[in-house]
Figure 1 (tube, rainbow, N blue to C red):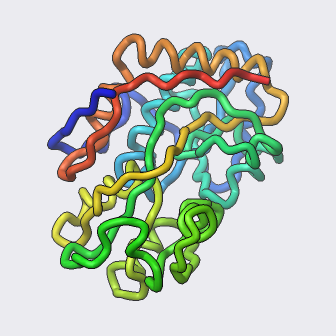
Figure 2 (figure 1 turned 135 degrees about the vertical axis):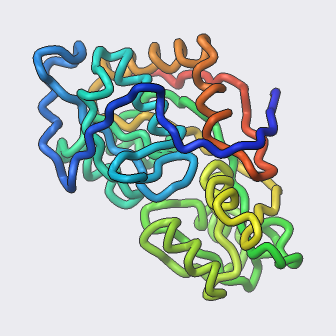
Length: 280
């Protein structure tokens, strides 16, 4: 596996993208057919609004790696950037949004799991992350998951990252639940929790924002396959998404988006192209 260290953090989307922000629950799920845009049709995509480097609301427009990936995939499906309607998709509402038709797809650090596959379909993965730990910059006690025993660990609602440590690894950390990872970072900042653990991509973005306050322990573990969430049974759309992801990597766009997204940290992103898991 090749990795690259980079030195700048990006907050731009694909060049020239005119993004439309959908306020609250939007009605853009009327896409028409599935062959793409044209005729004023739109596609509604759920992304995060609170994760630097991945999906962050800046002045009414989301920016970051996931947003760039979403814009590319939508383009391959036939939608221009101004035909994309963005909706905030928190970890806790991703399945619900897809099941209710609030969005057409979710690209929001959405890890593919067997449990989630019971409820929604996935294209991809488009990137494979690992889990890591974020602590205060002056914390030298926590160097890996085993050091979280007896510590207070923040858990974001709808995410299984903390459970990977307490349940799967059997480490006796005390969980403190927050609404999202931005709230976890606030709790870490004021000393309410000792650590935040989730995907290294997410933590890298927060560390880049406040390098004097936080640091990653750089002890990656596990595997998080980021998928494109789709309504259950949308096999045709899933196959088209997989073709788009393959093309994105083949053209070098995926690495370019990663290169733009992360910096000012010790995070080394993977340049290895993920294998599509196939569509049911």
